[in-house]
Amino acid sequence: NAGVTQTPKFRILKIGQSMTLQCTQDMNHNYMYWYRQDPGMGLKLIYYSVGAGITDKGEVPNGYNVSRSTTEDFPLRLELAAPSQTSVYFCASSYPAGPNDEKLFFGSGTQLSVL
Amino acid sequence: KQEVTQIPAALSVPEGENLVLNCSFTDSAIYNLQWFRQDPGKGLTSLLLIQSSQREQTSGRLNASLDKSSGRSTLYIAASQPGDSATYLCAVGGGSQGNLIFGKGTKLSVKP
Image (cartoon, rainbow over all chains, first blue to last red):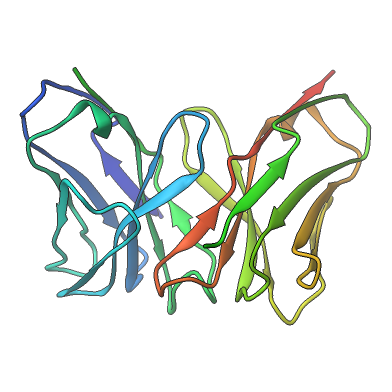
């Protein structure tokens, strides 16, 4: 069981470039999340999804977009990358409910630098 | 606005010691509290989840307690081992549907 898989593991972007961070899970979880973790800080929620076709903003959504066309995949799109988006990005999932009731399962993260 | 604080930021202990990690939160209206372990270069692993109606949860050498009224939780690690070295994060659920509010973590180092 692979769990939550994120790609790539590392990426360097130039200011203004765009990219998509991939996240897929094979546990048939309906809830999926994107968090970012800045150095020495706690994780902050960017976007989340309660099921295919449904997404909602978290605490820090500006500069990002998401889509959820399948249960398995939840890609995060960065448009016009800025240095402030330098961070480690984590994808997570849970079933059958959200973090108020269930444990979250995390991927290993994508370390992104914007220079 | 909910804020989660973890003290100390770092802790170093000799192998075999029992230790306590602390977590405090400002708003007692929470659904649950979760403790996670984070290893360098890896994701978070959920250790224990305590529902708001519970006082504690145990898993092996780990015991987590919750006191909602005082806004505190502790993670007790018995007979610490070098393999316990990691950063431990606590997070509370109770805001929007998708959100956990995380502390900054306590970096634990267990010396052989």
